[in-house]
Image (cartoon, rainbow, N blue to C red):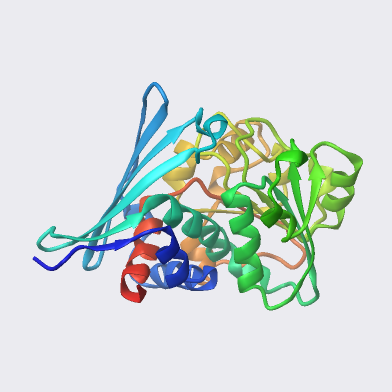
Length: 310
């Protein structure tokens, strides 16, 4: 058997740029693969939090991410998510590559958001204002991926957090830091072209009347049908893009709760495959929302590119 390749976090980020990760996902969507055919992940509660098992198969590869989420880790100075990614030859099931799963997740999650909604980003021809709720790896990753993909500059990036004193210098180097639930945040939202929510919130982070028509919103903070980051009213006149219909109705609280509140019709949901491939487009000036909760195929699409580049 060939030697197993090992990619640590440093190798992951050195091998693939955010824009290249977005391109890998869009290439997968442009082919015959349909996210609706992906293998559902399994989430099991344990004493520390939960374990997540995420297998997928695309072409010549079978991959599986084994992730543990420990709710107490931030207090220990450790990441909430610990993970490994294993890649196998799809015919022989020989193990070929082991990848740092947390780094892969950090790279692919914002890439998914941008890949899903990239056609809507072409509407911006002037420098844009970005508001990011959350300053963890996913909040920072979304800011970096947006900057790497957009054809225009970022005029302003504002990270909204509950504890500004805990925000690290690398976040402050990327933009300004705002205290949550303040008038300054409301002002930033009114001017925002792009809004990202990457938090552990279970209730809406802001009021829908603060979001201007035509804004692009990316929500990726939860995979719980009972939690949401976005207000239901925001969905009323927006185009709503999702990874997969059955997945979002099972795990996407923002969508599930907006439907139950009567603000969204499930039949109006658009899959990211259709939106990314140009089969459906948003109206001029229409707000576009992407709700993602993470699917197994996304890791494999990015991991396949990583394995070839590293």
